[in-house]
Amino acid sequence: MFPWLWFWAPQFHFPWSGDVAQRVEPNTHWFFQGINPWAGNARIEEKAFAVASYGKQLGLITEVLIAQAEQVGSATPEAAESLAKLKAIAREIEAIKSGEYEQTAIDLEARLQDLQRRGGPRYAQLSERLLPLLQARPATGSS
Image 1: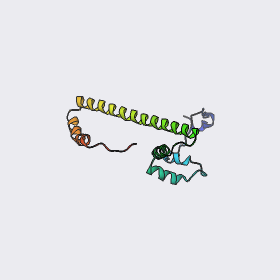
Image 2: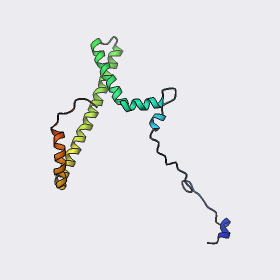
Image 3: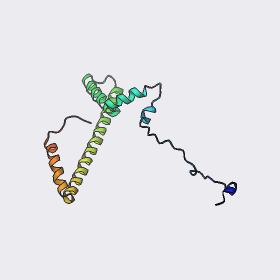
Image 4: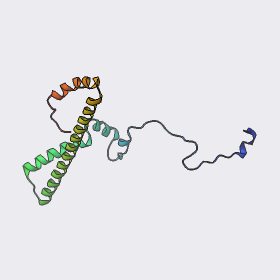
């Protein structure tokens, strides 16, 4: 090329083309930065979330609230209706969890059967490692 003719070779940049300046620093705290400053401290929220997720916290609160409401009884028809809705929500969430766990079990069984057919010695090694887990008592607790 002729370097002295550089001014006759303009560069055109269409949208989404041309030089790119990109920040490649991963930001893993985006979720907690979305918390409004007047709503709470993002660092505290992140540490609390590490202890128990929002879903876990709400699940425990729901269990306690339903148990207390059933012992005391509903003072008003509106409270009874809200309690019925809360129970329906809790049942629906439990059904979602149960469905997910069932699907996980189905997927795991299918993958193990596939490994049994094609895995050869790998399947034998895996079965030796998994057998103690399968014979252990199931953990009590809900997630």
